[in-house]
Length: 185
Image 1 (cartoon, helix red, strand yellow):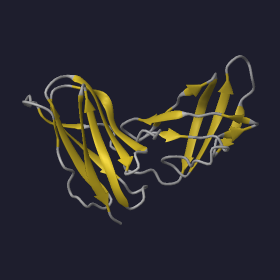
Image 2: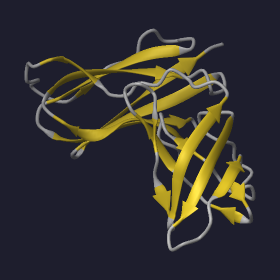
Image 3: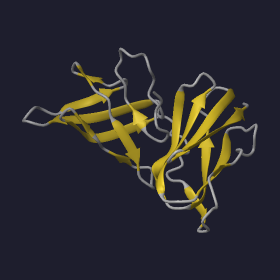
Image 4: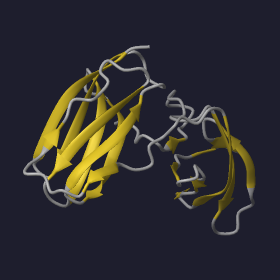
C-alpha cells in the first residue's frame, strides 16, 4: 500500500517506515473517557507507550486538519521540517465535455522535480490517479475524488522520491490507463 500524496502518516516505530511528508511531527493527545492529556508525542508516533497512525489533511492555507484514531484526538499539531509543495486539488481546464477518456503523456518527461499530468473524462464519476514504482508499489495518490466531465491537470512533485522510472495510472469507472514517466535529478 502506498500513501496518498499530501497527507502525513505518523507510523509505528516497529514498522521502520518514515513519516511521509514531514521530517518531525509533535502533537498533544487527549484520550476520550477522562484520561490525562499526554504531551509531546514525537516521531515515529510513540507517547507513553501508545503507538497510533494518524491521517492528517491540509487545507488551502497548508494548515493541518486533526483526525482521531482509536479514541485519541490530536489536540495540537506542531510540525518541523520541510513541507513539500502539495497540489491540494486537481485543476479543471475547461467545461467542454470530452468524447471519451484520455490520459495524456506527462510533460516535461523526463522531469526534475515536477511534471504535469492531464486527463479527460466524459461523465461525472469517481477518479483516481496514482503513482507506482516500476515494481508496482503505490507511492502517491494525486487524485481520489468524484469529478465532473472535463479535462483536468495535476502537478506531481517527485522531489521526495528517488531518481528513476515510475508508472502513473488513471482509473475512472471501468476505464484504466497507465503511462510511464521518468524522474531525473
